[in-house]
Length: 346
Image (cartoon, rainbow, N blue to C red; front, top):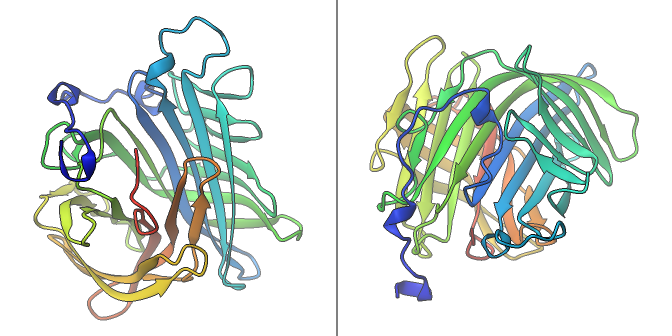
């Protein structure tokens, strides 16, 4: 037994290095335990209203039901989270869904990105490569087209991304940064507004992700104004120290640089305390990477999501600005912080 009463991850769960093949690997991988498709971005209307948005679909394999023959057995569960940050109002709107796969209610195709959970969906058009995101929420709605402008970015070593000191702590992981956004958003009962912007999509799947000492992670995916793409993350212990880190940098038209686990450093600069969970989140960071030093600032402090009705977690995920060493805005993207309200369980 390890600290906290958790068993070590079996080495037999280590993922093999393999070539990711598309469009197949845009689709679901139901033989592995955990998977998500994660779209985040920013958009602006013609009258200057600015928004941040996210739509995430999770798939979870239920090991104990795989041998059951009943059509009602919950072999795969699907969860989804959607959120819209209204920057003018300084307000976050969010909603969530959960269902077992099947019965025409929820499904995730193995052939391409076609994920659906009731009236929410993320579908990839094979002819254009564009993603269609639909998420009507309780007091907001998203209907967006996300068009790739750059090649797929394979994270880690050709798409195999280490997430801890044990080789079993890894995932298959690719990103699609600098997606051109157009579509409509609706918020607080107002008519849908046409918007344009930029987005980032992550697709990640694994058998075992978290080291037993890890309580959560800090992650950024940033679209820079010059067309570059920055990823940086760290897995965090309960005392706040980094257990593992990584990321990547890709300049426009250039080769990707992969960061070693000891070359990425997160330094908190300012904190915000949630009135809901009482969790204390760093909403301003200095992040040092081999590609340079940057500052990340949340554009709205309260972007905490309570997903206890679906995945069971409370976490912070929100639109943030990326600043260079001179203090000028170099880009925008999303900051995600998990494990501050409670240790994350995957």
